[in-house]
Image 1 (cartoon, rainbow, N blue to C red):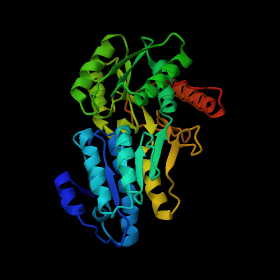
Image 2: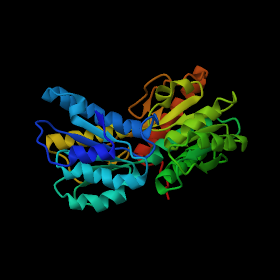
Image 3: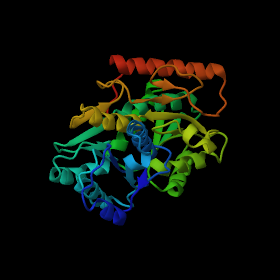
Image 4: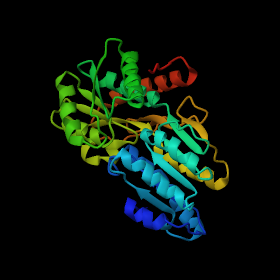
Length: 347
């Protein structure tokens, strides 16, 4: 896969080119690759699709996938337009909620171009908008936090104070309080997806306010949560989107669990739908209670329990009886979400 910078993209895409194989354009969110979570997952999904395409057409992954890492939201429009202008990409994928308003402006100008936006809804006839039931994942993380906390207080480090991250806060809070109605949650927002230094400072503030376990929902910024948790044996952290005990193994000793949000699966699925002719514009949901029936869950413990409760690479040592009790409670929560006896309220 090729990383394109804007000036190179202008040169490369200035004229339409004929390709004998499908091509994918990927515009990442600010913060770029290396967050070991949201952006990286989007990239992995596109890469997985590109690998299949490359093998089928006898070309390289570099021939199939081009990607860009915007430095700011102001870069989004230029990148999307440059990808779309040449007409050489079968699908262009934008990773992150803040691509939606840009695509509402850009997509109508290229009506034959297929676009995908992850984590938001763009009102345009040629955009597939992928949304997740983040509150389901967060609820399960809250269950784990409540069952492990010695202080009856958890924390959430959010990237920005926006409705998307508020769903994480709401789900986590209700998950903790489903286990213990007296549980409290301390919330801080970084205001940035790529600032682990500030993320650490705010995480330490949360820990010092009495929380002993923090759920990070801040992209690369919550890598600072893991660093903060390393400072005291009684502090733990919960990762986001992917099993971060696997993606950030240097912190596997403090990451007790991770919420799972299959951004990679969504990106892969949308690309493959384009190729097999089943792609449709509109809103497509992922989660336990969506028609897809998958896309959210948790990584905790050493065993796969179900498609929603997966084994984690966590190196936190817990007694087997504690692990089994938590897994049983998680399974009860999953069943409640699926059958509707647990309803997670969001703002």
